[in-house]
View 1 (cartoon, helix red, strand yellow):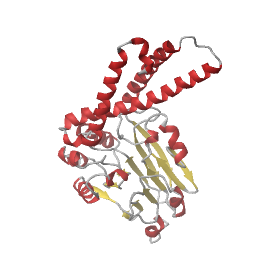
View 2 (tube, helix red, strand yellow; view 1 turned 45 degrees about the vertical axis):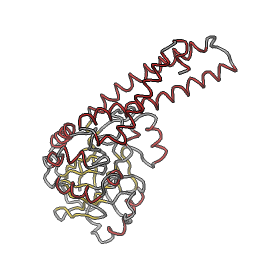
View 3 (cartoon, one colour; view 1 turned 120 degrees about the horizontal axis):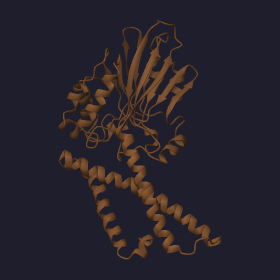
View 4 (cartoon, helix red, strand yellow; view 1 turned 90 degrees about the vertical axis):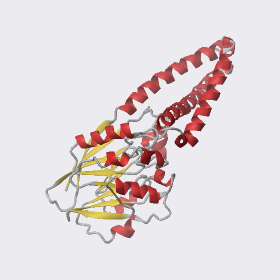
Amino acid sequence: MQAFSPAGNLKYVYFGAFSLLFGTFIAGMFFGNSFSPLAGKIISFIGFSFLLVLVYLFLSFLLIDIVRLINHFIPFISNIPSFRMWSTIAMIGVITVAMVIGNIKFNNPQVKTIEICSTKPSQEKELKIVAASDLHLGISIDKKRLKKYVDMINAQNPDIVLFAGDLVDRSIKPVLAQKMDEDLRNIQSKYGVFGVFGNHEYFGEGVSAISDFYERSNITLLRDSFVLLNNELYIIGRNDKISPERKSLSAFTSQLDRTKPMILLDHQPSTLHEAEESGIDFQFSGHTHKGQFFPGNLIVKKIFEKGYGYLKKGDTHYYISSGLGIWGPQYRIGSESELVVVNFRY
């Protein structure tokens, strides 16, 4: 409010808007499922957008205060109140432009294509994998958007489709109410659809309800388990790191034929060394969202060995996706929404 002191009553407008938007964020975050789907979506969008604005305003005010501190020791600004007001207005303009571009990027996911070749004995075959993570289906990522995602997946003519967790955002209720299993059943692939849980699958009504939804959606759920596809290669899925029941990777891969290629789904890219030690050919993960919005993209680089993109360790290939959907604010600033196509040769 100090920044708008020279503008008189404008500071009270700012305070009133701030209070209303903060209340909207609380309503969307904690009571979104209590509203109708349309009202919940609107309230959540406004509330989470405000959250992002709040983050950027904090960073902006911090920058302005740093400039003022420098000015205290090396004076170069004569009218501090005017500087505070106009610099704040300028920052709001920059934030607005960044958010408009970020929302456009979120609404236009890209298709990322990578080539992976197994070092196992060659069978002279190729598998076209379409992989996605972090759809976060629910109030914000609704049935209409899911249909768009399914169309994107089908347009790639996949041999197999893999979901690397956080398919559901928090509560399963809005997902069931919108009958999203109908859309997921429309996914067309030669060998089917496989998926694992992410951390968000543990936040709602329990894993049993989510498991039932996977089954109704024709998604084969892998929880520290595997399938042998055409007696040629393994598709392996891990329980999420948040699960107390999660086993070590070696506990259930030691029984596998290691001359056959192994593809691993593990939501959080936290223990990459395990895949290399277990002879995994390719691991697909998500969770990080590539930070989702700046400066989060810089933070995930520090937290994870690989926060986004392709990595190779020994004979093991990794890809950590930024996600197709999103949690919270529907903006991609310093990141992108993506669907991953893997041409896997073995």
